[in-house]
Amino acid sequence: MKRVAQTIRLRPEHRDLYLRLHSEVWPSVEAALRAANIRNYSIFLRENTLFAYFEYHGDDFESDMAAIAADEATQAWWKLTGPCQEPWADTGTGDNWSDLTEIWHLSPSATAT
Image 1 (cartoon, one colour):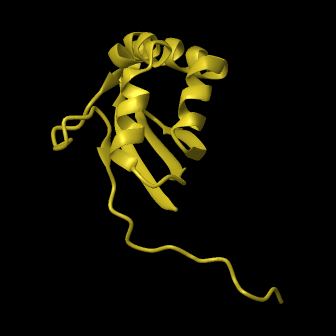
Image 2: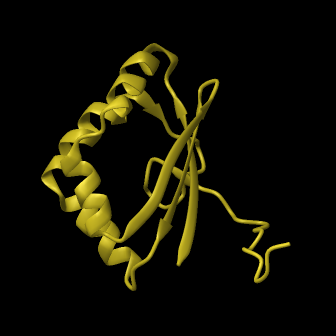
């Protein structure tokens, strides 16, 4: 399993729209994420900074991400959510969201006390 954390800024003038859209994410968009082996996906907000976390449970991350990008419902979703976001200058990979480097992880304990 691969853990992925990302961040992007939220444009203040589009905050209400972005929050409204995410209060009812389209089932077809969620289905595309699940089909691409994405699990445990969350987006958090602090002031005007968005933080996303998800777990990837597949074997070909690049191929699964390309499948999401090719999905028509996801493309329509991105046309609505994209203008709400302001990428950081250092996205680097060409995506809007900037990947974060994991520096520590608390693994589940083998025995509970």
